[in-house]
Image (cartoon, rainbow, N blue to C red; front, top):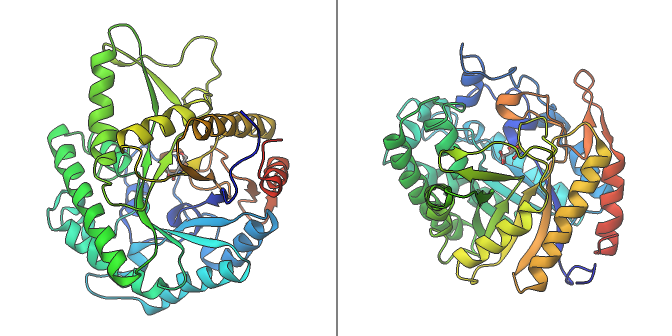
Length: 391
Ligand code: GCO
C-alpha cells in the first residue's frame, strides 16, 4: 500500500453553527444549556464569535490549502418562527459560500447539525410525524438561497446521535430516556432525510447530497456478538440503509467500543483513554469505512466528513490523524470508494455537553479575545494536503 491518495482526493475541515457562531439563543440547545440538571458543562455563550468572525475562519481554511470547508446552517436563524424567513441570515450563509469560492474552497453545507428551533422543539420536534415536512420546507428555502454557491449538501448530521443522546441517554435535548420514542424519532429522521434530499435536489439541482452518520467500530467480545449486531442495526444500519439513491454517505468516526453481553465493556486496560472517555483508536476509521461500503452495497461514494481527536497534546493529534489516514489508504487499496477526508474541527469549539473542555481544533481560540492561532498539527496537515500523500 503506497502513501499517495488518489488524484482528486479532497481534503477539508469542519465546524457546526452552534459550536462556533455564538449567540444562538433561539434553539433547543441554548435552552438545554440553561436547564438545571441537563449536565451540560457550561453554556455555549459567544462560542468562537464566528457569526462575526467567519472571514477569519475562511482565511484559516485558505491558509491550510484545504479543498473544502464543511459548516452548518442554523435553522433557528433562518426560520426564527414557523414560516417566517430571515433573508439576512440566508445572505450571511451565502456570503460565507462566496468567500470560500473566491479562495477556491468548496462549501460543504450541513442543513441540520444537532440544533432545532425552539418553536419546533415545542411542537414535539423530532417526535412529530410532520417534522419531515417542516425540515424539507426549510431545506428547500435554504437550498434555493445557496443554489450555485454550495458544492455539496449534508441533510442531517449524525441523526443516530440526535436520536440516541436525546431520547435514550438523555444527555442532549429533550433529555428523554424512552426507547419507544427513540424508535419513532429514528423513523422520523429517516423520513426527514429522504424528504430533505428531494427538497435540496429540487431547489439546487446538481448539488451532491447525502447524510453524515456517526459510526463507531463496535467490536464484539465473547458473548457480545448478538448485542453488537443489535447495536449496529438500530444505531447505524437503519440510516445506512436509508441512503439509496444518495450521492454520497458521510462517515464520521472517532473511536471503537468493545461490546460484551451487557453492552459497552469500557476501555481496554492499557489502551489510552481520551478526555471524553473513549479509547484512542484511530484504526476505527478504516473499519467503519469498510462497513459503510458493505452496508450500502458498494454503490455510493463515501466521504470522511468527520474524524479528529479531542486532546491537549498536539503531537497526539498528529499521530492520530496519520494513523487514521493510513487506514483510509488501506480501505481505498481494497476498492472502497473514499472521495475525501475532513478533519473535525477547524477550531477548538463548544463540544456540546462537554463544553469547551475537549480541544478538537486545528486552531486554538482565545476564549476572551477569540484570536485564532493554528497549531503545529495544522501546519503538518497542510503539508500532507499539498503532497496529497502521507508523510
Ligand atoms: C459529532 C458532531 C460534532 C462533535 C464531534 C466531536 O459528531 O458529535 O458532529 O459536533 O463536536 O463529533 O465529538
